[in-house]
Length: 249
Image (cartoon, rainbow, N blue to C red; front, top):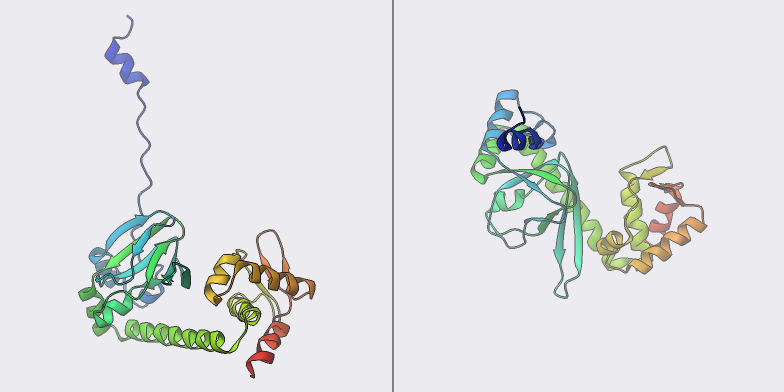
């Protein structure tokens, strides 16, 4: 017997693919590395979880929210904008990082905008749970203080560079900072992916054209080398000398 219309429709209808569930675990968050399984599970339960698309805003500057955010998957960017609308990149945070602790600590509005650079899974922990965690776990509080101290140090270095170095030398200093985080030998670094000229320009307050010119000059001197998907700093000592020569160190 030929199938009825309903039977045929059921045969031709395919079950839709089930979307991949989010991995709602904070096991990879550095700040929470000292927590036991039960404590970590309690924090996971207290969080609100949300997935963001590339370039989607997570929080905005002057927003009055006070959650602390954990980057579970993906990569995010901390950025501010000048009155003319030019973006100033303050930091980029990979999976395992967190942000938003300033507003959670002092109750004041957000100091910067944060956007997703890639598809990102973010867990938001309400302020009261974050403060309670700091009170109960000194190890977590110490990690937060250490990170804040690092932010102050980097900010101080940037202020000095903007005040004392020319645009070319600020590009040198930015490349040296990146190189120090990915050393591939005693005097060699491999920066991957290759830094975007516009991102460097935003960090050091110059133009993409200046960044391109400086990097071409460094390549001619044999200090750096571009490969398919990695920027090799072949002589970090020489790059450091170039920065110190003009900074008086």
